Amino acid sequence: MKDFHLFRRSIPFMALAGAVLALSQFSHASGWAGSSGASAQPQSNDSSLEGEAASKLDKKQFKDVKVTVQNGVATLTGTVELYEYKIDAQKRILHAKGITAVRNEIQVAGAYVADHDLRAKLSEKLAYDPDAYGRIFDAITLNVSDGVVTLGGHAHDYVDRDSAVAIVSTTPGVKDVVDNVEVDPVSEMDNRIRLEVARAVYGFPSLNKYAIDPVKPIRIAVQNGNVELYGVVDSQADKDAANIRANSVPGVFSVKNYLEVANQPAESTK
Image 1 (cartoon, helix red, strand yellow):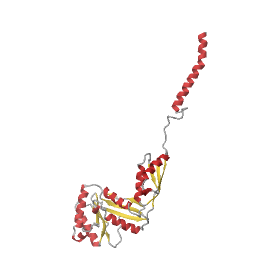
Image 2: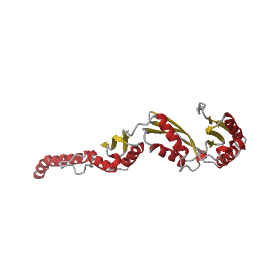
Image 3: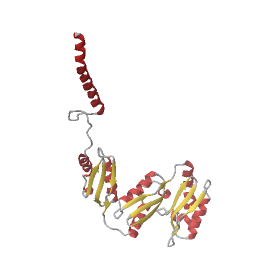
Image 4: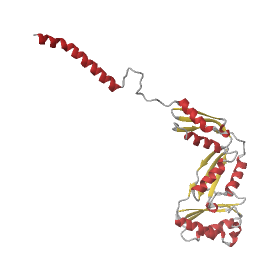
């Protein structure tokens, strides 16, 4: 009987111990802790990220640029003198630790240049681009509207395309740049056609005068055997002659002649 009474008295104690154990297991599984949360992971501090980002813009050209950060996304506001600086600021911020994306709202506030004057200046710069490897094979078109420059046409390779974009980006008066330049495909056949079309066109007696022009006013783009002619010539006869000469090259599938005749309306490339 003594042992029986002892067993009965021990039941409440055992139940209480089981309840405490169960509560402890539940607390651990649910992440509850009575301490100050030592196991919690620290979150990113936007203010410290702003300081890190701002340190990337410690150059004179960024003195009027502000950066704010929310959830790792940096927003750039303010003004710069050149479009080049706007793009450079974005690249610098993307290298800041903890920044996951950039919203670039910087305005280009340099001196105003009329669209007509800006186009003329850029056309000259692109025509004489010293970094263009195959200038004769670059047929880059240009449009300017309210300071926004749109580049189109074709480039011989990515180096020449990037060089054209850099020229535009560093020119005062440019507010924005739209790069629609197509880089011609790499092809041994196209390389042969480029050279042979150039010889056929520039070597023709009535067109030989264009060969001594450093601008190389007749530009030749080739994509998979299809030739496009761009530039400016003196007369309709020269335009027609260039077209005939390009078509005479073996392997050429088609020729689109976008050459402009001086003092006449340009033909649309669309």
